Amino acid sequence: MQTVTSSDIAKYVEEYAPLSLQEEWDNCGWQLTNGDAIVSGVMLCIDITETVISEAIEKNCNFILSHHPLLFDGLKKITDEPISGCVRIAIEHNIALYSAHTNMDKVFNGVSGRMCKKLNLNNCKILESDCTNSGFGMIGTLNEPISCMDFLKQLEYTFNPICLKHSQISDRKIKTIAVCGGSGSFLISKAKELCADIFVTSDLKYHDFFKADKRFILADIGHFESEQYTKEIFFEILSKKMPTFAILNSEKEHNPIYCL
Image 1: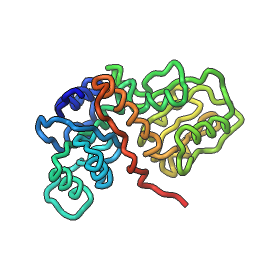
Image 2: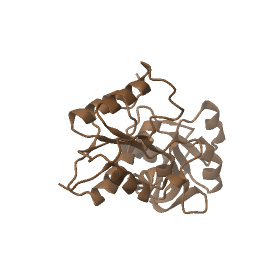
Image 3: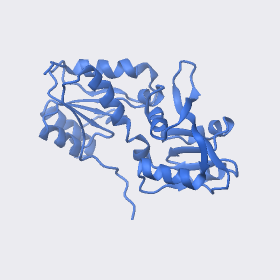
Image 4: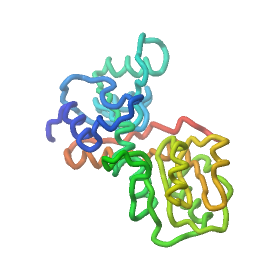
């Protein structure tokens, strides 16, 4: 098996999604470094939790690669809170924590690009570009237009949301689809401007749904669900560089939202 260090893993991810792309408010990259330790295995997840860290320990993974950063604000003290618990356990077991968040959101073949791939969209482009071939959201087209109900069923099948919320549907066919992994309400106007028939995202508020009209539909598939396939991107990045290395998806992480 090839020898890989923690800095190697970080380098591979940053080659794909440079840290320079992250938003100012974000905290991508190292959450907790273990120096240049030899990596025994990599655990992939969306969120770093004590359950995920325990699973990594159990499966001999000393590097955890997540989409959402564990640390957004400064950690001023170690307490009994969940974030502190994660830091404490990771330090005790010399586990590196690294996150690729808005930098992975903004690359062309990032989070929203993977949503397009799962929906078999063509002619895809970035919804709101920052002129560097990167930005938030994507927009593309289906091979053939389908009914709104059929497309919503496709969303259910592809993303398996615990609750698929949507605005009023119409008899219009769905052909052009805009997507944004995670919280995408800030892109509603852009999706309408580019003549999308439907905008698929998450974390829409009550009043957001009033922004839909008879020619435009909003669909909220859930935050975790919209980003779940980010782990596929991580796996592809690392497996191309380390084809014989142990790269595992967390089997114990779960959507923190439940619904009766």
